[in-house]
Amino acid sequence: MVSVEDYGQFETAWCPGCGNHALLAAMKGALAGLGLAPHQVLVATGIGQAAKSPLYMNCNMITGLHGRGLPAATGVKLANPDLTVIAESGDGCNYGEGGNHFLAALRRNVDITLIVHDNGIYGLTKGQASPTTAKGQVTKSQPFGQPSEAFNPVAVAVAMGAGFVARGFTGEPEHLVDLIQQAIRHKGFSLVDVFQPCVTFNKVNTFAWYKQRCRKIGAEHDPNDRDKALALALEFGDSIPIGVLARGERAVFGTDLPTLKAGPLARRGVDREALEKVLRSYQ
Ligand SMILES: Cc1ncc(C[n+]2csc(CCOP(=O)(O)OP(=O)(O)O)c2C)c(N)n1
Ligand SMILES: [Mg+2]
Image 1 (cartoon, rainbow, N blue to C red):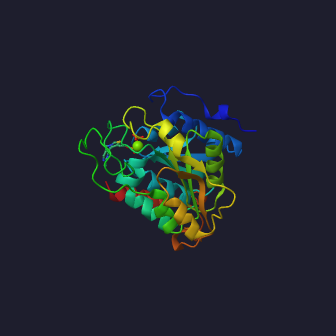
Image 2 (image 1 turned 180 degrees about the vertical axis):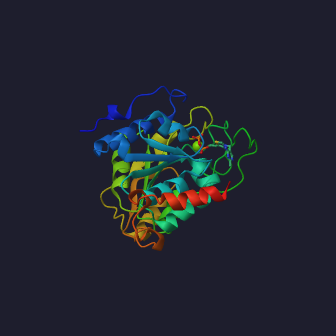
Image 3 (image 1 turned 60 degrees about the vertical axis):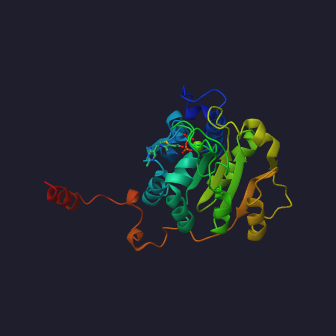
């Protein structure tokens, strides 16, 4: 029996009131609730406040460069499909610096889950606009307002045929745990974009701002209906839907790759002779 305590309790460097605390608790709750022990889980991350999350949790982890958690997660899952592999970091990491990795992950459909701490700002570097900062929003480095249209990650994921697309909010913790668990259970690439406040650098998208707008998607929505899912994903105003936007079955990447015909790397022996030959060639 796995418990939340198995995932540990650590002192963090986050501000009091930051949404990262609730999302970290939701991650631990979701994993323990699924009966996954820490050694069965690997979290790949990048750089940022959000990217510190797996440092505060007992589990296997990889810290990539900024925006590079997803390719690391992809490699790990292909090498060892027995692991539950999660990529987790911020909106800047996944939609800004790592934007092309996000698009590649949507195209490939590797069996990994992406959890995005979406606080609409670059928190670690002290408050520049991120791709999800609203057009016109004033930040420390955009005093006249950020001039581009905001990126809508869930609409892009739905449009590209992602098999599981959800949006959560740290102010709805039980709902969030359920979304993370559904995402992990889904076979193929799954996205949970999580709204959370940055109490220090985003004075617009506060806890109250999200609380006022987030409304749970009702049972009447059929996530398999891609047109309806896209319409919901595009709703971003006085009311913003949270929950499972889209679902669908797609071929999972990796199963028929010629290089993996002999099985994943983690289950293959190491050819010491060949390895040493390669190493010697660098001497
Ligand atoms: C290639 C690269 N560009 C920029 C940076 C500087 N940098 C580090 S973290 C960060 C922003 C992080 O924002 P986000 O991913 O939203 O995480 P948050 O801190 O908001 O949780 C930036 C711009 C970097 N480390 N590497
Ligand atoms: Mg951020």
